Length: 158
Image (cartoon, rainbow, N blue to C red):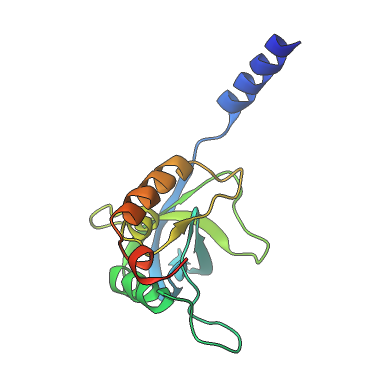
């Protein structure tokens, strides 16, 4: 019984679609550390970066989360309005709020924005299956950032 079950899992994993790229987009606005507004061929889209979670900047009835403003400032500096980006999709294309889900790359130099946020201690990994193409990479980057006391790991208790 165990052998066919393992075989089925192997087949399912092999059939998982690879992440796909969209045409280039242009940044219109950075909402916060992990959410941006872009123009894709004349269509406005709100994009939620897959696999990462930055501390909140906009909190009802209270101050921003620890390191939220710093994460937002980093994303704003990296993705100024007018910056060309490449969006890479995963299995699920939109979240429950209708936002486009994507891995974001700066078109000019290939900077992987999602990864840069985690490596600098500005975001924690957040894996929501089946969008898990880079989950292991983000976890490894987070472990390194935490060990080095970078960003929120050095500034925020807990």
